Amino acid sequence: MATEECTLKPIHVTYDPITGVPSEFNEFLPKDCDEYKKWKAAEGGDLDAKLAEVKLDKNGKEIEKQLPGGKKKLKAKPEIVLERAVRNKKKAITTILGLDTFGVKLSDASKIFGKKFASGAAITKSPMEKDQIDVQGDFLDKAAELIVKTWGKEKGISKKDIYYIDNKRKVPYFHEGDEEADS
Image (tube, rainbow, N blue to C red; front, side, top):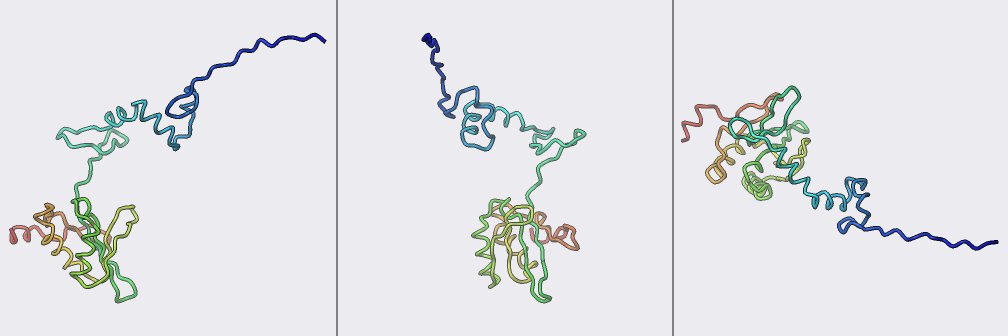
């Protein structure tokens, strides 16, 4: 038996300081892991991609999404939607959705509604995953007046921003004549 000498030399691997794996493996990391996110952020591609995604229409408004066929979907204007839901024949729940789009803190608003109407008021998630206020009782009319009175001047909520659900259709709560009468 002859003794042969091994002439293998060690391979020198450089590890990425952000992810801790060799640099050529960074793109194969799972997309939801923290190391991948840090690597993408440090790479600078995310910021440039986000800035490139923001598009403006002719009027300078931000376009939310480009639909198939070249149609443009604009961002929705802020609005408040009131809804009355009947449960157990005589019981009702008034739902107020969209106050947060005007910058109103929902926790403070639910306390105001609860004290004003002497009933329970809670913040819940809507089926569209948006926060809404549920008030126990039928306070649709009083809630609309309270919203305009409390946050009208402070947050810029006008009567034309308030809608209610009637027969599964969104209808303006105040008529056009009501706006001029109160101004």
